[in-house]
Length: 137
Image (cartoon, rainbow, N blue to C red; front, side):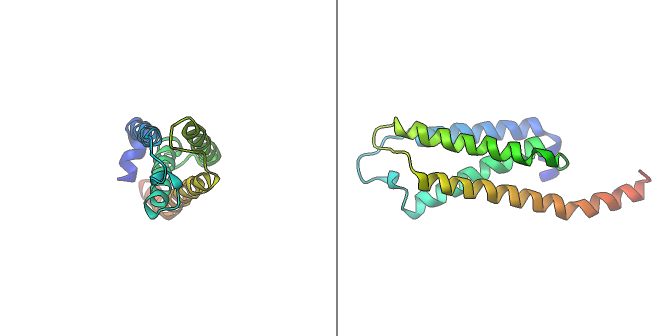
């Protein structure tokens, strides 16, 4: 599946943008005091980790495509800047606030996705080399 997403990186980009829109939409939800916005609930923690993991993972697949290892840093900074802008955006939403803790959770999700994707690339590297030696390239 990862190979297919890398080959069809435009589709991966569209998933990335859909995730960005979803994150923005969830960040735009207004809360009364004491809602989901305090960031300390398990749901909130899980949301931040998974949303930014997904964003960073699909952004990685779209830009790195299994072989452009120099793109890891731009992927990190793009996803991190989106996380920062998401927190700034929440400052202007009634019942929401900027949270350094949320930014930390977002960053953990981003770094986790980069580690997982780099591990996938690492595991498949010997397979590519082996396939290339069989084909004579």
